[in-house]
Length: 215
Image (tube, rainbow, N blue to C red; front, side, top):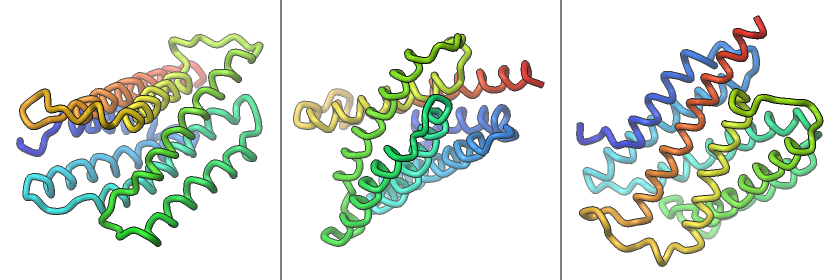
């Protein structure tokens, strides 16, 4: 039970719902996101296990960041391509992020957390989400927002990465301990994860209902 953090439970629930609702989706998006959730779940449990035993675990985060970059970029591309050709901005954006990711380890050991890439990708993902909203508002076709899966998936991404960006900017203000040995920054991180997975879970349910209507 010591390993069952709130984030782990949220990821597990989200993974189970994803398997039940979008794994068999005709689009590859469903399988990609489901696999990502499985990787996130294993990583979260491994990180917690190492932390409890006081074993260095930042290298696990560095591995996970690569999967995170690839999956979120793929998901945002999948959502944006409904309204525009996002290839040019994604080639530039992904090029910058991957270059930063790999170049970081030229000057730093793999055991150092790749904070530069985390900060840049958070800003980039936030901008892509805002661009999605802009295109959505410009689109002349009517959509039912409350049941539109892409909208809720992107909204989860926006909340998480915008919150992460603000947390990185004001990092010095969030080091105060508020619950036992947990810092305010860590509590914000937990809340952001719960928001992300809540929105994603709802988007999976919306997608399942959408598929039933289309069948």
